[in-house]
Length: 463
Picture 1 (cartoon, helix red, strand yellow):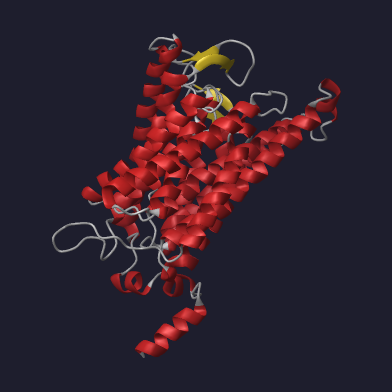
Picture 2 (cartoon, one colour; picture 1 turned 120 degrees about the vertical axis):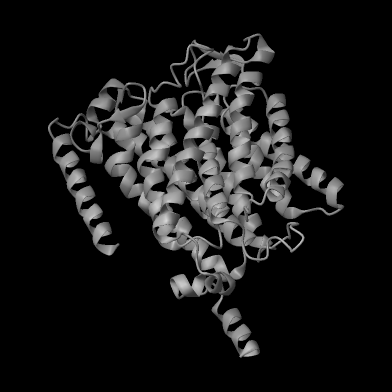
């Protein structure tokens, strides 16, 4: 197995080097920005706007790390933090080499982009680099979503391989269909399939791949009793989970408004307000719903309600009014609670609720565009064609385009994710041993407990 893996790495390296040298045939376009500035004196403002927004999105990695670590047990905290680190590392390198080319290269048949390999040759341009950075932080977000759904039982090497393929192919190809001039963007219904900041491209992709991984892995030990009923496995720190949620909420003010890709669209004010209102509505509805069911004010469900509202508003945030944002967020809160119970009843163990937050609410966000888009804003433009939903006289065209995208992203992400995890499981087994799972992954996989004093004290008590 080691020899075959080495052979595959050598072949992959040769292919990447070939792409690098071939991409150097064209000269750089504008590596200094001088031509860009000459043609557009307002460019510096837009560049700073996009970069700062991108920095906020990158900081969301810290939010995901805190949420996942907090919702899981202390004995797996180092493992989860390591996965949230390494997925962005792998995504950065793979997306730079090939993934970005698949997303934003020259369209080939509406399916995939070709070119821009290694940001070399004609891609050595300030505008391309700006766009690459923006797309990279989104790719990293899609990759890191999965770690929560497969938490506490997935081998670290399997996570490395999964991240590689998501960043290389699964995310970039679907993103090309929507944002790179692919077939979904060109649908003849409404304004074509639209997804302003990534309810589908980022969140549904991550959520559906996470669902596939959780299904292949199976539930954690102790999640279900002998009677088959699910048990609660409490996380070790609601403080970390709450901190992570606040970080993510804050980061979303870069995620959504920054997707205008210009500071000169004052629509950013509408987007920011809608983002916040949806999060607030999702929190409130999730909290009230779980209280009516359990008679407990469940903080964990409220935190996921906030994240669900944020995910749902990500697709329609630029195309809806404030009241619609509240409705979208409120429905998202209901989906969070219903989704968690739905998955548990079917034996799917999602320790942090990633599938309900990102997968189910990503789908709802896409569909909501076809219902609530008010026809006052175009395709990242102040001019027509405007995006108009059913409730504003747009007919069923936009809703049909959105539904087509929902079917496409669910089939693509879940299908390829399931194949990927299943093949890895058949080749080398992706789940840690029962002994390692019961002990926790921190020491067996990383040799470093997140809380060494606690670990030492527990050892002394049981030794």
